[in-house]
Amino acid sequence: HSLAHIVKLNKTLLLLTKIDNGQFPEVSEVDIAALIRHETEIYDEIFEERNIKCNINGADSLVVEMNHILATTLVGNLVRNAYIHSPEGSQIDISINYDKLEIRNDGTEPLDAERVFNRFYRATKREGSTGLGLALVKAIGDYYSLGVEYRFDNGKHIFSIFRPKKLN
Image (cartoon, rainbow, N blue to C red):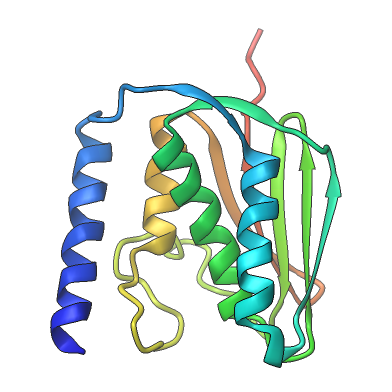
């Protein structure tokens, strides 16, 4: 178990280093909405016994120019976190439009918005967690000049990925 955790930690740190060093020049058209649907199908099945419902609203397609591996990592980490950290019987709401992806899940108290994207930050101790999932999300967002935000509103954790508005 400890060895598996160390291997996972090493792979994640290596991925972060590669992102920091710009080692993902390969870009293709990636449909973020399709990745969301794929990931939620997987996690719906995994977390079926916890009776977590997921609603996806908005665009049927959101095509962006990104490295496919990084896009999958970005979406996968956000969706996985929503399922893992949602209480039993709760709901996850995902909205997709042409310039923003937003994932909302139930929560009882806010995370530390100043530290939530820091490496090794964990609000709660979870077995198997490296504390690097949201740091990866932030690194990928920064790599592609995307806005990455967290806020807590009305008992919901809200993670947003968006294309920043251009200054005139």
